[in-house]
Image 1 (tube, one colour):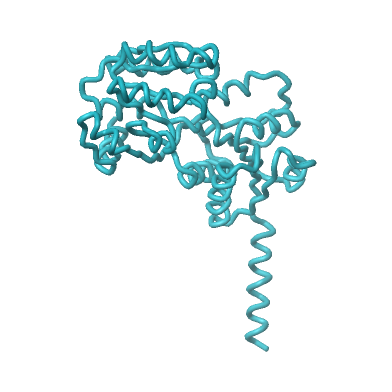
Image 2 (cartoon, rainbow, N blue to C red):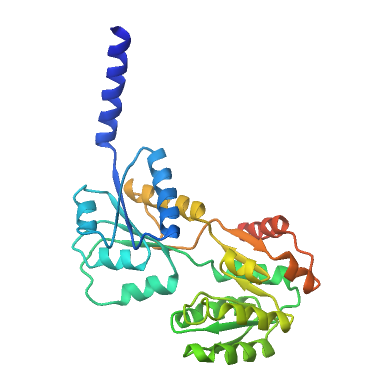
Length: 306
């Protein structure tokens, strides 16, 4: 009886802790595997830290309302649609916008109809240009001209890249794509003037209909493409920098935890952690011998420098 009473006491003690734990909410833009993977990583991190996690989807009836009814301390949004939904609500809660490119985040903030008055913090999906250019210079020591294809969604980032290029004594060889039919022509123009191609996420420029042709053109021009996804590296890009669901999930969870404690958090952040992939076949064809682990270590050492 005493053994049973002890377990009952432990059960009620744990239940009391759960009842008083901070609730943190996650609103998904959609049910795609990428959102699910990041959401699961965030939930695992938060629950391990003793928080209660409530999750819902934009498409669910009363999805956001059901989350707000739980009185969360912080709302995490995954993707642009989720952020847009929260900003259109009357909540005053702090928001952590994750799994969203910088250009999309800035565009949503500019949209009319915002009612939310709470602070909004972003964890960009993009890698910082400084990190990408560091990689390019490590791989292509004689790099002088960086090729870029700009589209309507990415164009707003051009001044940011140009500042990063200027700081390194590099120049941009860029072209703007206004419609899908001009991607090929813009690619040929950029490859004539550049030493390597930096791909920047833009759905008009890089999609299932265009990426193969861009990679083939760069391969024939003997120029490496530095990509933003492992799929593009597998398809023929020379190298890629990206953040895995586990990495961005851990970063997002820690930011939400800090906000729940009332700590000061930067308004915007790039991913603190990253993964590097190299296509060894493409590297060999360009006369390069690249070691993923060694390159990754060198990048991390560069970022630790003052």
